[in-house]
Image (tube, rainbow, N blue to C red; front, side):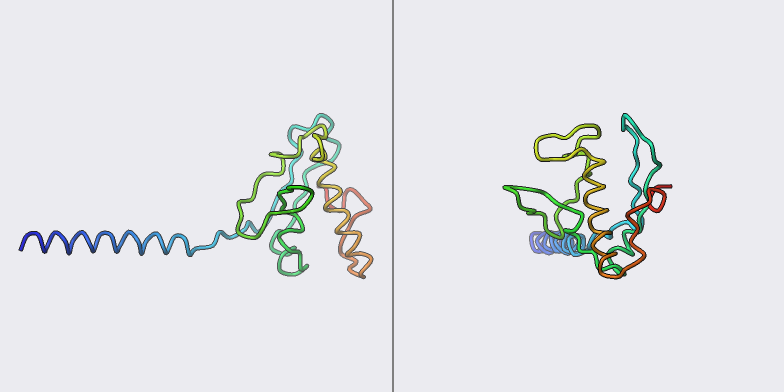
Length: 137
């Protein structure tokens, strides 16, 4: 009798653990609504930080995750939605280029400004890329 109760309790505990683990794994990580690109650490910081609405870029402007997030292997972006998002500075040095990785400021400027230029060409006039203060505070 005691053995049967112990087995039932043990089965119940394991069931709860598996259900809890499944619930945690099923939850998706929500991206932040706003991202602040800060210039702390640059040797020459001429402009202020850039605030961008992550939510607007994803939902209203149609940006795909891989438009900004990337892990480059053999010249290709192998990052896919659901992969961990690294901080840009993990690959892009603050003050100098490292191999194929542009220095951080150039990487941001190339990625953001090129995308905004393309959107502007497509008639989206709310994609600033010419004046620093349109993006920088």
